[in-house]
Image 1 (cartoon, rainbow, N blue to C red):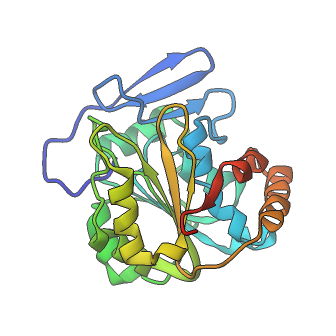
Image 2 (cartoon, rainbow, N blue to C red):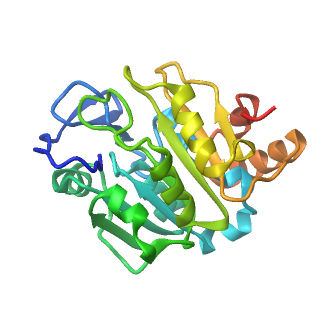
Length: 252
């Protein structure tokens, strides 16, 4: 996945188990997956939860919005936003082999006017003025081949991410890894977004915790979240009603 470190990039390969194809960066760590018979759905639970920003958007507005992924992985989020949600979608990925693998093995469509996969450095993109104030849904999943901790995880980086967002925009971040500290990462996000802007899921069985940060903090009642989740689930293949039970503000 995209990283700011100037180093030799790992080789990319894939494996299959039953109905699922997995992306690897030269190790056994899973960097993404795809249901072979449903290539535009999202197979992994934590990746589904990266779509939780939908809980804060009117469903009829979604197709008019712009999604950006920092880190392509197996392109699950990119494909879902492009194909299912019909959004303008931009993905940033440092490793050209990952982009090639997604096109060859994971059904990533060719670029169009509404789909743009950029070979680039996520840290540099986040700092660049070009996309500032343009992104409605920013999805950050930045791990190297060792999957030890987020590659970009500083208050400065999260402040750059906040500047990318529209006033109503949201960022979702995957926190996972043997070396990562949830509390430290959340503190850095709080420095950039404010503690009252942060929401989080309970960890998945695999240990992935998804944190959501709002550009403009909003208080939303549980009943409103459930109503929105039911609308999401009726339109798109996402288990949104399950989210509400394990998703809450981090600020008391």
